[in-house]
Length: 290
Length: 323
Image (tube, rainbow over all chains, first blue to last red; front, side, top):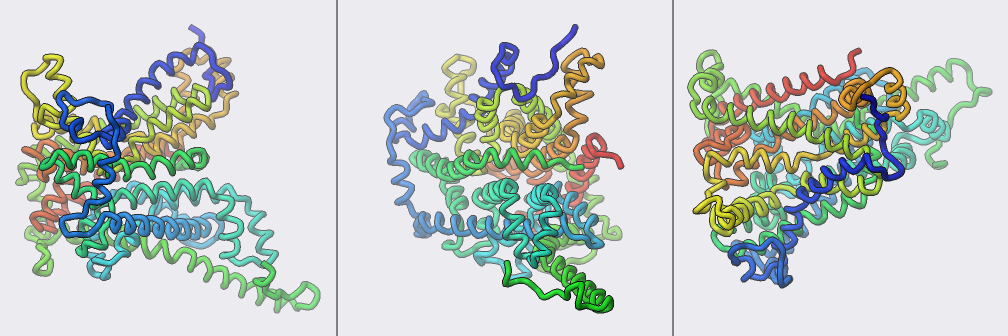
């Protein structure tokens, strides 16, 4: 039997691709079903949420679940907007801090020469397989000891060291030609100038990827509010939503609200990824571990 | 940039000693600068990753309940470990088999699935590829809230649950099944839901790797007598994208062990009903945050870290570049 060479990234459609579409398209549809479902569920009026047998698609869409959600206050009387604002502040701060920290470290690991360089990079590479939840307890003790407990910073600081982020950024900075940096140095640029004027503009795809990863981690996280925050007004939106979904068993009316909340949580993830997809793919082609 | 210029002695005016001194000063300034560039990350990295791992190791040899200071455990500190492998019935009977089943299917299984999907995607045109890969990636970014909202209603135990209502309507069952509360189903549902969300950045990395393989290699391989797609994958594709394969493998392993909260999220209880969906992560939480037996919980986390490390070493042995 002889075959044709594998046709990677074909320009034109031909019949041999049909078999791939036949598998991929149904699978893709299946994968996004739950996403479609949450849209539909969030738009359902009360009687449709109760309906038996339940219907997948909404019949008479309404925004009532969203308005209920926005008017709802947690049992302690904190309005929903407060949680939302907290989440936005925390996430934006974390993204900027992560970008600055990983870029400066990635730059040093890629372009500087110092003794521990190789060792540091391989430690970071080992930490790629770090399972944070495994050490939740010592982390708790440390955070408590530093006094981060019940402060706003506890949503941000423990998550800033992101081995995957540093890894991707460092790999990407490796692509920046050394001559460019040498030239800037001759012009008298110091390291900060080089980072902000040369490195950051050139590694935007990697930074986009790091932003997405940070966003997904911080925005979706309930851990910090759950474990470290006592003051209700410092908790985040994701946490607030878990309190809604926990009550879901008690009241079916809460199910619509919970779906609306799940949708609000999820949409920013989707939008950001769609906007930056090509940059992420660009980063990923340099993601290999050697 | 001009304002940051430092005056450097020109080749003309300076003596060799002055030049040497200047160079030395530059080098020292550069060292200092490097140090400050590394400092923030290293501080954070040590505080929240290295030290917690070390503290876990130390605590695992102690008895510690958060009230009294930790004291060395019996049996020269090995008490927790000995208990874990000889006395902890739940650990041996449920947690270990569950974790093995779950992580083998979700880790290597999910990895294989990601690779096959990426491989097929690499052979279709760019525009549909972009949309289909978006659809496959989407589940990996939904987060915990979404999972509990959607999947709990899908598998809900009353007649209103989707799966139940479909089965009831088709006449397969007579009364609703308590999917999320019954030991027979919970673990399988967890595996299913995790696989659904497993096409994350590892998948994207492999797709990018596949697209970067030099096309002419495939044609050359054909001349050299490659007979089928399978040989092509083994001899050309995988060797060419080993670094991405390794990155994907590490992500798959970490994902498999990190996603352990799903059982608790789905069933709404820790321990999960009759320990049916109890994974090693939940066991740590159970002892650490519910029973406050910190030393014991730490011993379990050390075991977990070692297991993850071993898995990753296997991945490195398979795909790492030997040098």
